[in-house]
Length: 249
Image: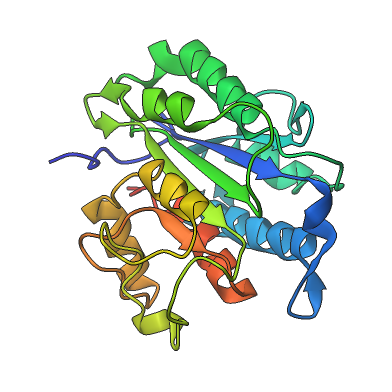
């Protein structure tokens, strides 16, 4: 069964976060700045990883994490890949909004990181790239790079790509209740070409991830893709929870 290898200290899960820190991230989402909501949601996801990695009082290194912020350049926030216990000690770095949205540069950097990590990933869970953005890219199209990444295959399954799109212009119908929302499906009507592009850059949600989301009281459908419309802080938090849903022992 694909995506069934457990994240353990010997076979940790690799999660690469790509975080858009363009100028528009200073705009409000509800009563907070978008970038502050992302920081809070990422902190909550990290706490979830720590909780799922803790045995007694010791944090087992079941996750390995990279965080790349991007605007006109890509910034390695953790200075390489760090284990979850190391990141827990550091906390989520401060995210400072900059200028443009060079998404292709971020995916290219993630691809290079994957290539460097590839030999150590053969016996572990398929890695996941979680990309958060709030607007269309500037510069080259990231889609070919994302598709290349999604075609990389390990015994556990292909590399997963998740997108969190902070926008209220994705869906034609508002989400009335996040807990009963089935997710974005392959044929869900979308309001923008860029949302459709992000859907094509998003992996189908594996059953093991979906089961974890069901345990967290979300009713994601079996055909949903890993694209979350960040129309409010609850959906942004849901997206980052999904990124940490690799099964653990």
